[in-house]
Length: 135
Image 1 (cartoon, rainbow, N blue to C red):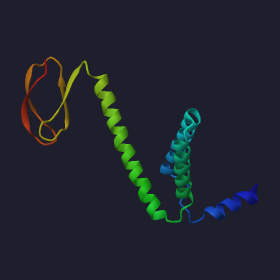
Image 2 (image 1 turned 180 degrees about the vertical axis):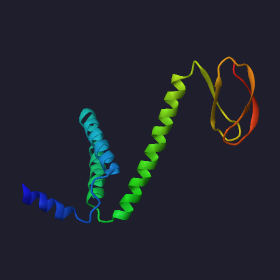
Image 3 (image 1 turned 45 degrees about the horizontal axis):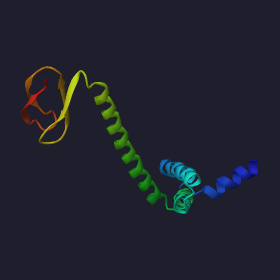
Image 4 (image 1 turned 120 degrees about the vertical axis):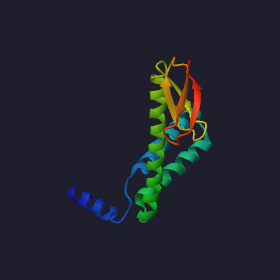
């Protein structure tokens, strides 16, 4: 077992290894594989093979700089998606207490308590002042 572990360490030296993007690609390829089994689609068979092969290519690649740039793009993209999802969930949860709307100038999300009537609002981001009816 120790010899096999040493062999793997020597083989992976100087290679990218498993990162978040290659892990996500592996899960996506598994999902596509399950869909192709259920739907018996040749297109999906080829697609899962391509996605999984790209995932393996990323793991064994020696161009660590390029792979880390791709992974950083993926991580940043996922952070934006998670933040947007979290904000939507929070707005939905508080929808009965607050009225949510966007600033007409910079599209930043703003909120005011429901039932306050017509209010003069100042955007915290761009300092644009406008009236909003929160009835």
